Image (tube, rainbow, N blue to C red):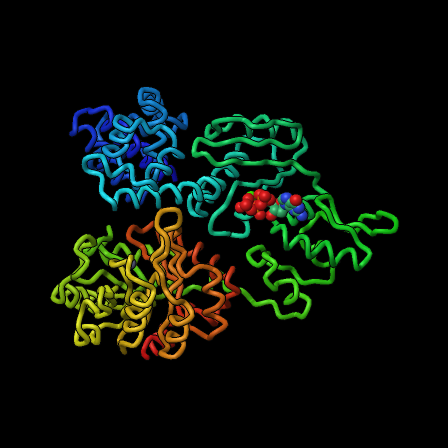
Length: 570
Ligand code: DGT
Ligand code: CA
Ligand code: ZN
């Protein structure tokens, strides 16, 4: 979907207009449009002008810009605006958390045009000399700069994978490719990636290279050769495309899927067995005879190993496990029987119960837990006790009408700063499912944060801890928490820990999911859906679970409803 890209451009345009001192109404119109597009459940690329005009905050002018972007991959007015604002100033705006007002101040008063200058001046406390800049602003700028540095090197999986899939789709439609597959860290579902690696086969490699370089997403061509090209997209990410021989496709896919350390282990094994593996195939050392390479399985088979799924190829024990026949049977998307973390429009979601049920059933789910926010969360329109009980009654009434599908009446109760729950036990005891999570006080010490989470897990009504570290990849670091202690108490109390599948969260992460599983902690995989298309994020949660060696039996929402209900009670 192009929604996220368009939302980002509109929000950038608002910043640029603000710097230029334009009409505040116009600025607010861009901000509002950005927000509405970001939260939209349908793909704007598939929308007609009439559809677009129905989106709140989108008039003729903005609709035309959206259509322009969908057609040409850019918006001329945005390109022009960027040219009008000095480059140094745009650069300042690229720092997360640094808004247009501060950027303008720094640029005009301190003549900061370089991020290294900015970092030095922030660290030397030079910025606080300006009106309106506080110690806190300086701290946030330093944090933003660090995040930017990390973000330049690697981008979140959830932002890159849709882009990569779209490129593959377009190549299939426009280029003479036969096979085409995403490789590299994306195929391993690593939570952040450096670039997009794509492999293809074709009778006409030059034609493929030609079509690739002309894709509308491409900003710069770094290199265009007869069988390999590298480009940079408008979003700043690099894509490498290689065309290989049909008979080597499997070997090349294994090689370029990596990881590098996994490949090194395979090559060492090959040498010991008198074999040679490279991106062209598997060969017998003594006479160079080719033994395989068309299929990826060939590589593993000829080494005497079972197939190792890409998510495990990190050299963290998978080769040993393959050798001893103890590879896990990884959970699959089709094992998931329902989603246990979903919001309705009663709190900060966009849909009513019927719409959510229809969407969940489309996915083949058997149940869905409705878990709106609790009263303390004002910004997320948290529910009062009365509203929550009203929702529960509505759910009970709807359940009577449903066949082969049930809603669970739940709540996502906020864990307050002092570790108490935002609803008292009497209310929590009324619910089918209680998930508890932290939404404030992220800056507390590790001891305090851990104490809050432990207190929640010791509450007999709390079945699940949601997004246990609060991170947003590339935007907000995890709060400090003693993970070992958290998992110990989870195992002891039978509290399940969520793998939140929202692509910027992926929380628990893969390593923690693996630790949890090894300690016998119950897991759930949930999407935290606010808009129905977000049900799709389940795929990301399952991928993170797979990277954590998680099996079907480790995850509660693979159970049928009756067994699930039993396990949710502590
Ligand atoms: P990334 O891009 O940092 O997110 O991670 P990868 O794993 O996609 O790394 P990348 O793009 O540098 O290379 C893609 C795959 O190609 C990598 O997983 C393994 C293979 N590869 C690249 N360079 C080498 C190398 O020098 N030696 C070996 N054995 N394999 C390599
Ligand atoms: Ca890569
Ligand atoms: Zn939530």
